[in-house]
Length: 247
Ligand SMILES: [Zn+2]
Image 1 (cartoon, rainbow, N blue to C red):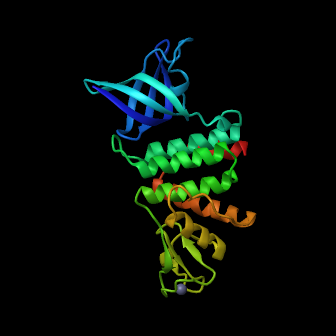
Image 2: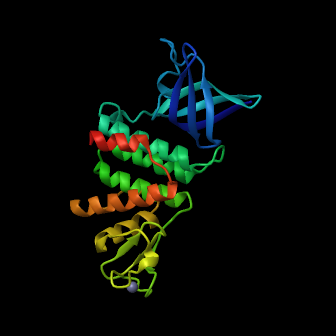
Image 3: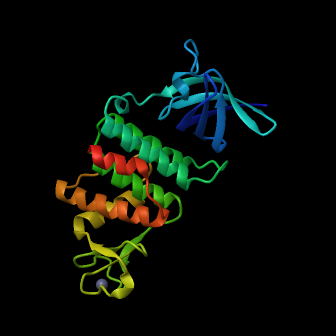
């Protein structure tokens, strides 16, 4: 059976002499493992479209439970990610995050669009890497079912909490004066960062990275989103650690 679909190459590994094994996040089949025969041979036409961080049109051959690439062509190569080790490592973190959070063989167009838009923004220097990363982490973890409740102070109910504090553990906000031990690990974020978090969560996927925030607030936003993201994925990411060392 042949399947036409678009997919992002989350990971690739060399297999045998000239083959690649891909972890593909596809529009129609979700995350699948696909073999790409001969992708590493010199004259292969599927070499570029089966590279990591490439979004491609695929014709997949599905036989006896195994997917293989029949044909492929590049839809978006994200050129800007290739020559810059900082951007490249951050992009790898985005793919690793999707790999961890998505469910096997379950299509999720929101999650796919979230990562594609982040890669595009990073590749084209549309915003600072810190802003793209923060927005991506918060949007992705929300798409995975862990959306924080930033609507009102969870103690007094005020919709505009004074000196807002964000609870990393339980994903709620409260006023500084309302803060108590039930907040668990938490951090002061300030009004601007709260506004940005609300924007990221509520905006459509096309625009979720496009907001303006002073540089010092971007740093706070980045810390809050990363802490929340790591807390709820419950693991570390090598690519994130690497990005921090080269950044
Ligand atoms: Zn309050």
